[in-house]
Amino acid sequence: MTAANNPFARLPRVPSFEVKSTAVADGQPLLPAQMSGAFGIPGGRDISPDLTWSGAPEGTRSFAVTVFDPDAPTMSGFWHWAVADIPATVTALPAGAGDGAGSGLPQGAVQFPNDARLAQYIGAAPPAGHGRHRYFITVHALDVEEIGVPAESTPAVLSFTMAGHILGRATIVATAETPAA
Image 1 (cartoon, rainbow, N blue to C red):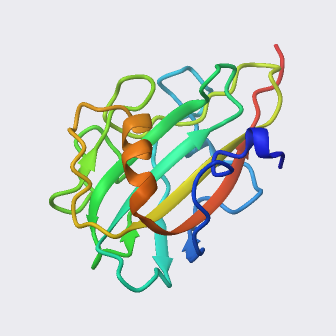
Image 2 (cartoon, rainbow, N blue to C red):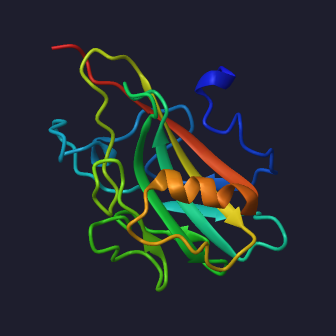
């Protein structure tokens, strides 16, 4: 991965910890459930993947979860999901936690509008024939209980605000591609 297309290249280096999912695996294609029905991908259901993490650094006071596509045909990538203020005692999110109601999120967690301006998980929808896209599914360990970003903010504002509070990061990089018509 080149530094120009690595979303973490210009952020402070931090230790990694472990994140797992039964729905997605590092380097593997997303399942249809994690693809976007809202953007018309056949079989897409916009279901956020289950995530379980362990080994967060000492001093972790909360977590944030983001899903980002740096390969989207924009100058700024595409944010598919962003959640913050997940208590440090929480080490898993069930599949579908990122629905529009945030029904699977712990109390106090804040779900931000994605780049489709929906406060929920929106699945992958790479344009037909655009090639393989990478989806960085990341759990960020933070040194604050609450990040203090208003719920109507963008994931970019969340990311900017988190940058100085990240103690560790756990990432699964999944892929998706929509064949040319």
